[in-house]
Image (cartoon, rainbow, N blue to C red):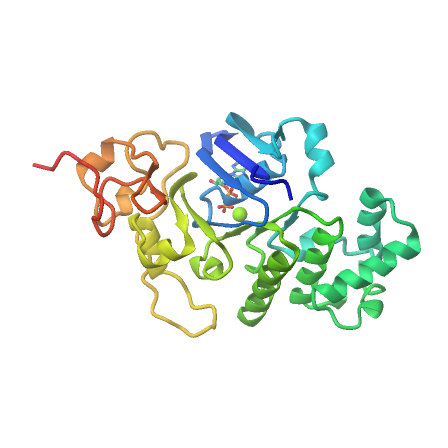
Length: 333
Ligand SMILES: Nc1ncnc2c1ncn2[C@@H]1O[C@H](COP(=O)(O)OP(=O)(O)O)[C@@H](O)[C@H]1O
Ligand SMILES: [Mg+2]
């Protein structure tokens, strides 16, 4: 543990992707920090910039993508320095992503892939590395770890593959795990198991966790703090409890309405009408206003900034839900 200092600090991050049709502003003015042992959930629709934030946190923004503002610090050191990013990535901070097959090498056994990482980062000998690999597989709930080490990824189910990816992510005793939609590719029952595994490992090992998902239901029990992302910006943040019971931003409220149940029961979904904005032209006004039930013409012309609310959270909205502390907004008409 490193005391009170955040492990990861993202300050006013701006990331763009120049494309032939214009510059995509994928991440706008995003600030967040993750302390040792803390779990932070990032929730937003597809295309809202979640994976770009994850990649920035790993020092992995690659051309044509560019960081054009702000900075990312890992334990106080800038990850824009590729040497520093390389030293920490996969070791102190590791990634579990959506598609386990894309993370695993299809033509090498599980054992070879696991021991390779440990040989590189921990300088373990062959026997030692193999023993540790077996222990890790056991830790992530894979039966008969000794036999699994000699199998290839395709011989395992999707859920088992994801467990292997998690075991590899843990293999160098990281301080922080970034899980980017770790359950999206899995069936509902397996999703719940993998989430429970990530959550229990996080607590048991005292890991910091950034859990990224498009599904608020997924981060429900798993995270202390939530950040709701819309069109590249954080529009609301707060404790999981506050956001669930008293969402202030209409988008958070809409996401709650559109959250499928994790237990697989079908609940009538309130679909969020409309489309997210074109990220090549998102300058004035509130990006959510075209889809927002509370929107006024003021919202279309004035950009709301993230400000603290009275309960320790933050939201960026001129006409929030439950107007406990509505901001002074010029009335229409
Ligand atoms: N390499 C790229 N080139 C151009 N645009 C990109 C690239 N990567 C991401 N984007 C754009 O950046 C935005 C955010 O993408 P992403 O971070 O992947 O969102 P999410 O993970 O929330 O689905 C999207 O509009 C996406 O199209
Ligand atoms: Mg993504």
